[in-house]
Image (cartoon, rainbow, N blue to C red):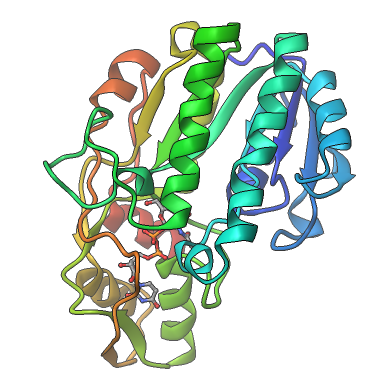
Length: 302
Ligand code: UD1
């Protein structure tokens, strides 16, 4: 299925990028581009080449894109909260490098698979969310991802760049970081294991569609290999959702923890509900998630 010779993975030392690298090293040459600001060197596959640089450095990034025949652009400022705290940095990391990649890809016919996000949709208007759902992001992060997502479509329409946007819902799995700016599953995992309170923000009725990393990786390979996907955007989730309160309870059970669940302030810019309609990814890419959240959390934390 994967007949590229050389893949570039930005953010290849991070959570999603490193799993992609592991999956690809046996199939093609892999170059990881990462500044190690949140990723780590141990995550980079032994057989991959490594460019230690920031995606905001346009020259090395441009050169790296030109040397590859497919780019998976996973490098990002991934935290909604951090984008609220520091919108200028978040903007610079999440938009300009994608534009550099698309400009370089115009010259070399490099295919681009971009990590977009469910955060582009903002508050739910209709459920489940399909790709034509209104897009009114509630955070700088969501707006940045929406802008970059539109750039992919525009560069396909205007310049014929083979760019695909994958709108990830909430990814989780091994190597996901903990700490205040990381995804809720990494935070609850660490809290449960340490026997600390699990901190549910708000009343915990907000919902998310949690998608296992193995399914995210598969979606990337399908997006790279599917010609009709160029210029298109696809929701990548499970098609189901749970509340954050239920998530906390499940993680507590699966880790056999006796930690308490407490409620703290909700966060600014948070969206209330999120659940993907994945029909388009199914029909065009042949994408089929293999884990629902119960099975995925059990495989990961059980
Ligand atoms: C996440 C991703 C983002 C991705 C998006 C897709 C991270 C850091 N963010 O954003 O990159 O594009 O999904 O939808 O991975 N919460 C708690 N307690 C905590 C931490 C979080 O209750 O200790 C709640 C939050 O208030 C929120 C929910 O959990 O309601 C999810 O938060 P988070 O994991 O940060 O994800 P998103 O904001 O959805």
